[in-house]
Every structure is written in structure tokens, then in C-alpha cells.
Image 1 (cartoon, rainbow, N blue to C red):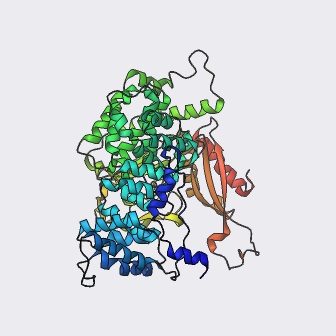
Image 2 (cartoon, rainbow, N blue to C red; image 1 turned 60 degrees about the vertical axis):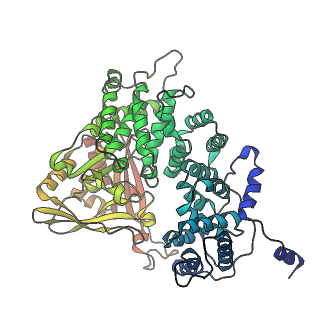
Image 3 (tube, rainbow, N blue to C red; image 1 turned 180 degrees about the horizontal axis):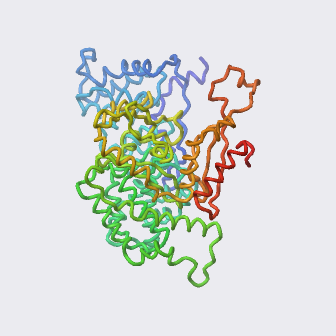
Length: 624
């Protein structure tokens, strides 16, 4: 052993809490470090790496005698006294010293442990959190406090949450005690960009006015940073408390604050980037209620109309509908929004566009691109204005297919929202992406019921099915009923088996027919897409002659004035990579070709006919 190693063995290591506290005290103004602090260096465990089950079993062998002292194998000296808790902490340190495990293993084992003595478990968690010198025992303490922590633990959890490798469990524990602090620690650790950095600093300083100014200064591109980040901002800024006030702050202006508040709620509810985090925001219903209470304070205009209409669509058929609403509470919010949008100034937006557009001394005319985008947005408002305020009763309440186009000025996209007994099905049972678009589910007749069972993909993960899976159901006719059964989720999905659902066949057929024939919601680009898809179903030879197939066709995700067609075609043999030689997978021989058709002033029927004629004459691989 070297002299350095001998010295390290003789000098006790400081606790990780003491190490993090020293670093934190060195930060000017108590700032939270971006990305957290590195853990102090320590020797690697010498134990061998094992799989998930083996690692969890090894953890249980070390922890269970100390977490469940009623067990016959528990040491005789375990008591609730302080000395015995310290002894248990020492033994846990010793038992975990050479184990290769991670925080997620610890959280899984501790969360599932049968613990009868909560007082002792809390004391053990505190001892490990405050005195632990290695990450794994401290993780055990954090996992225990996630179950049994109290407000007095918040300062310790906040400090340990600044260490990489401990942040996730510290935030998990804080979530059960102090959600705004949990959100602040999360944002401090995962913050990105100067705007968020300024927000975190203002939150740490407790400067409420600066927090609001930072919020309204965020760039619009923040939407792409993920729904978890948006939900954490809502929690850390305590935005619901600001909106509950009878009078909103004057700085920033109330309209800016309200606009951003509504936008944050919508982004948190979006299933297009990640799961709909609005379902994990405990104050979501209060936030919606407070926002709607101030909705009339927004000045009429295209942007504000689109915002209020989007909130109404979300409450009507989006993930937010499955929040735990008291009877009539959600409907009251929709009535309030409808009342605002029915006022004369707001009706002018639907009939004439933005009353403030291009007006006022010194105002610059909009660019052609901005003006075009605004026209598309006004057209969307006109098509969609009544959709969220229609009340569905009778047989239609049992099953409803809502073709819903998202605000093209924000993110856009179209989905077939499936409401069963008034509840959106896809976010409730899947939650990793929106329901598939109407061109997939309705235009191809996939939702029709036949005697022969058909498996249908209802939704795909926002990333890809190969990454986070998809939701499938088998649809079949059974006498005078239609049955949805044999649900299929990713094999790793941890959820109970979904029940079979039965619908009256006559009512089911009527609803499918209504949804298939309702084009009132569709944009010109989307109507073009539906006509092209129908034409290709009627004449499959238009693609097979080129050894191609249709992947999807829809209005453009990025340019609302275009129809996008995704075609798959056979790639040329590539013997260097094993493709075309029989050694590669069959799907590896297909390549994607995107074809964009602009809306040019002609009718959707004319654009679709021209596209089909071109496919009959030219190989799509030659298109620009």
C-alpha cells in the first residue's frame, strides 16, 4: 500500500452531505450549479456486474434485515434508538461497499420493501442522508425519505440534490414534501440556456417579480425543450398562486403573463414531445381555473383567440380531460371560455382576422411569410371555433372520434382523439404519444368493424415505435356488438391488462361513418392529403410500378401551406453492406423519399389529381 493509500485509509471520509454543503456555500448568493457537482472520486467497487434481477436481489439481501426488522432473519439488537440506527447505517455501508448498483435499483428495492416501523425507517433514512460517505448508501437514505420524509428534511435534500448521481432521488423525495423546491432543484440540475439560468437564479433569490419577468422573456422555441421542463417551471414559479390573485401584477403586463401562463399549460399537456406532464401536475385543475378566470382580460386578437381556443380543445378532448375533475367543473370552464370568445371583439377575429393587424402609428407591415402564417391560423380558427363547445349526449357519448387539428401557429399536427365514456383513451392507457391521424385510422377504414378480427395501431410513441412502443387493439364484430380486445403494448410496459370494451354495433358504425365523412375540420393541405391517400388506395399500381409504397401522407408538420407525402422505395443493392445479398433484414432495403406539394390556390381536388397523374407518369425517385 502506498503512503497516499495508507493516509486515505486512516483519514475518515467526509459525508457527501458535508461535501455538497461546502461547495454550495461557496456559490455566490447560494446559486444552484448548472448540471450539479461531480461526486468526489472514490475507488470503483470490485464486485462483478450483474443483470437487473441479480442486482436487486443482492440489494435486498443487504437491506431487508435492516428495513424489515420484524423478519426472523433480522439482527436481535435492532431498536428504534439512535445508537441502533447508526449501527444499521454502518452495516448498510459495509454491505454495499463492493456492490455494483445504481440509484434506480435502490429506488425499486426500497419502494417495494414491506416496512412496518415508519419512525425507524425515517430515522435510518436521515442517518444515511446526513452521514453517508458513499453514493449507494446515501441513495438508500434518499429512497427512504421519498417514502417517509418530512419538512425538516428539505434542506438536506436540497443540498444533496446538487450532486450528480443523487439528484433524481433527491427530487423524488422532495416531490412528496415540497414540490416547488423539488422543481427548483430539478431545474438547477437540468437547466439549459441563459433564459432558464436567469429564472433559476431569480427563484433562488426569492425575487417574485424577477421570476415573472424571466418567464415572459422565454423564447418561443422553449416548447421543444420537453414537457417535464415545462411542468417543473410551473411548479417552481408557483404560477397558480400568481393567477389566483384578483389583480395580476402590472410588471410584466397582465396580457403577457396570461398568454405565457396559458401557453405553459398547453405545452405541459402536449403528448407530442414526451408524456403529457399536465397529468403529473397536482395543481393543474386549479391552474386552468385561475387562468380561465382572467381570460377576459386578454385583448382580442389572432394569437389570443388561438390560445383560448387551444385551451378549450385541451379541456374538451385532450389529456387534461382525464384529470380528477369534480362534476361540472370542467364544463364550467368551457362555458366561461365560450362566453369570452362570443363577445363582439372576439367574433371580429373569426370574421375579419386580427383587428390590430397592420394598424397603429409606426407599425411595420408584416413579412409575406408572417402574413401567410397568420392567414393559415385565422383559417384554422374559423374551422375549429365551435368544435370544443359542442356538447355530445346520447349514444355518441359512449364512443366518439374527434378529429382534432392543433394550432398551426404553435406546433400543429392532427390526431384522431378517441373518447370512450367521455374519457380520452390514448393518454389514459398509453401516454407516450398522440393518437394516430385520421388519414391512418379513418380514411383507410381501419376503425370499421368486420367479422374477421383486425389489429389496429391506435397510437405510436412520439419518438418511434421501435424506441418507446405503440398501442394496438384488435377490432371485431360479435353479433350486434363491436368488440375492442387483445390490447397490445410494449412488452416492457408495466401496466395492468386492459379490459375488453364492447359497443352497440349500430351506434359504432354510425360514429365511424360520421367521422369518416366529416371534413369540416380539415385544412386545404390536409384535404389534399386525404384525397391523395384515397386515390392511392383505389389505384395501388401507381406506386407498385415504381416498387414503392406509401408510408404516410398528411399536411406538413412544419409548413401548414403544404401537403407532405412520405414514400418508401426499394434501395439499390449494396453488397458492401450486405443489403440486397440476402444477409440484411428485409426492411433494411427500403428508403424514404419525401414529396412536398404546396397549396397554390387551386382546389384540393385539383392538387390531388395532379399528384396522382404525376405518379402515373414519373418515378417518384426523380422528384426534386
